[in-house]
Image 1 (cartoon, rainbow, N blue to C red):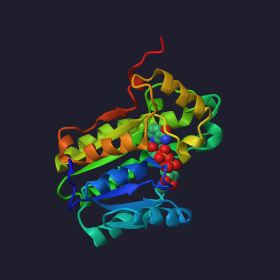
Image 2: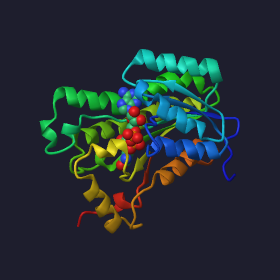
Image 3: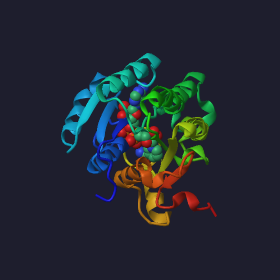
Length: 258
Ligand code: NAD
């Protein structure tokens, strides 16, 4: 093993199915020997997540956690504290917005749709950090997933882009708050990947084609590439990095439009 996480536990939030980026992160951490705690949203996903988790090598635990409820977040992390004690990090791989607001003009967003996207996709990271902090007694690494649409205007990304901008800023403020406890907070800005969440975004196939043609690496991003970057961020190899947004996108974000 090039990176050894034996004896460490990480919480992976946001596995829905085998295409989920969270699942690739879990596999990378599992291969490095980490113990994993999976959290999922809603009973509908329980069986899926349990079946996937059972296919892993190492020890794991599967717990429910709907990120829209502070009570549920607290209950989940209390449960984790009781069952595993100390954790070494969290991978937050969660976002949501109304499908009808992921196409057309951004300014048609409703107040409710705006707040929903902010609540699930941005505020939830702060809520998770608050609940996880007492469990990271020996320091830790918190990771979240973001997208270029938070830094630049990406067609159809709309309200989710505004939520990702808030998420990116949260990463920096949280990194500053938690750095004194030896806890690092970083985001991975992934290139477009065909997942359940991505299905909701208008014109997604055209975006994939554009990346294949124009990204410096001339290929789309894979879940595994993101998983391995998360492994690096979870490990001590990245001990000097916090408050950072690492682009795992084949270099696409470095290009100018002209
Ligand atoms: P996915 O659909 O597999 O994962 C999204 C997860 O969010 C699901 O597991 C879903 O259950 C969870 N979720 C939604 N509402 C929730 C709630 N209230 N409580 C708890 N969990 C909730 O899709 P994905 O693409 O793997 O998305 C993971 C993350 O990666 C998201 O933050 C997404 O914005 C980000 N991302 C995705 C891409 C891409 O192209 N797929 C690119 C950059 C960033």
